[in-house]
Length: 324
Image (cartoon, rainbow, N blue to C red; front, top):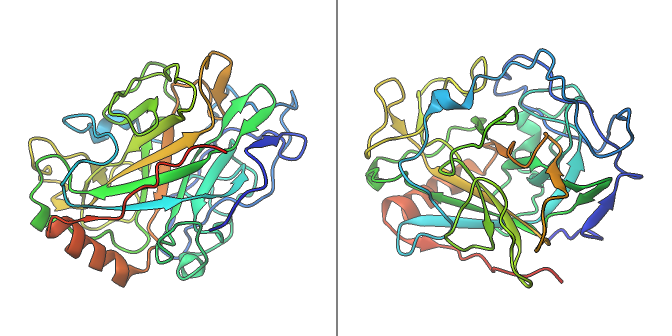
């Protein structure tokens, strides 16, 4: 596994960033991601711009939300689980800023180690990964958690893949190569639905809209649930939401009939106790979100969907490790 040298990264080495601005939807061969370069913020801290500029991002509510909260492992439900370590931290966004290094607020990237502002999907496929399943070369990223001028480095992340609530597992199709997804709202002003973005302590089932006070020995966790219905045509869309929806009552809407795995991405931080001094690089602690590009080994992804989701097997178990 790829291991980081510390859990706290000073912004003397990683300075703050500019907030998201607009860009067009990437094609399958133009998908790109964050690099190690950053931009300097006026206050020199790990903050974000309050001016959202000309950001093109549809409201998250257009996709709906799951019927219930999905928290961590779901017993005997068919699923496959992948655990990933942090790859790198960069002020880039591979969906909203393709080719524009340093244009975003800081993100923590997991999985594919070659994600950069200029990398094409063909460069992501087959690259090295920080995930325990070496064939999971997908790109995952979330805004960084910050304490004043210090970035709190995540301990690890877990990706849970399963059928959406009450969706027939047999109907679930693998993601197409290059599918992009954004879940949660970096522009949120009010609390987000806990069915989509939620905080908790460790892998416990209790989920809240804002971070709880976790006991000593536990980890603060951010969990984001992605849509599980696809329009069957587009890898992305203007506004980056239109090609995806959440299922409801065990069915996908008529405009998005293809059931795909529902990804729940959980990031664990070495944090317990008071959280009032923390924030996200995207803004307040209420602006949680996560992003994904499918760069899995496609044959292996198809195998996992068939063996684990369709045949109702539990494949892979998170270690549930604690910070050192």
